Image 1: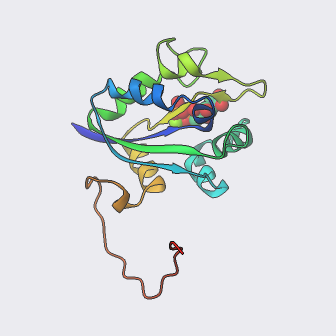
Image 2 (image 1 turned 120 degrees about the horizontal axis):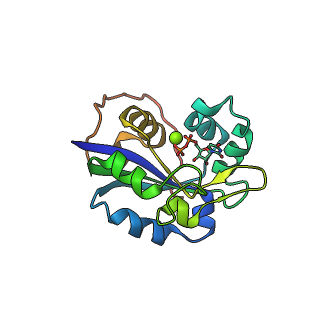
Image 3 (image 1 turned 45 degrees about the horizontal axis):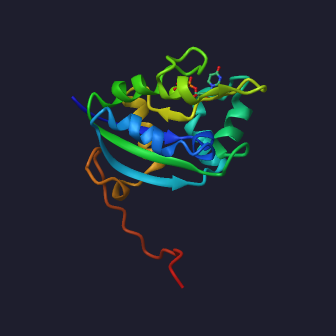
Length: 166
Ligand code: UDP
Ligand code: MG
């Protein structure tokens, strides 16, 4: 079954110049990249992305980590699409805890646990199709994705202010 999944190269991955390595590993899946962008993560986006972990002791550190306070203030967000995309990507990512992750997985090879106890594990990938839908809709607008993956509607806006090139 064709699926879509959200992938984030987290700020530690960008700081360590791991983008190329991560994309090369992901290309083993033969999935299609259907959206990508570099995002400066706001506190609101970080909190929404990790809303399920709000009660965890590491939550505040996790928010700072994904916002880039410890590395660079950017994340590379992508949508991959294709047969069993969710499981294929999670497999290559490896376990959440980089010490427990298979050493040949992305997290096993490049992740670490900080002295504050946060798993800096380089990459995020949606865990299941419900999570993928929630996360893709949080990070991307429909027109930023080159395939139609979820139903869309039209919102007519009367007066919109937007930044344009001067
Ligand atoms: N995390 C952490 N300590 C933990 C569990 C999670 O620092 O004990 C961080 C880690 O960066 C992880 C993120 O919180 O990737 C989200 O946790 P989740 O359980 O959703 O793991 P994932 O889906 O990323 O494998
Ligand atoms: Mg998760």
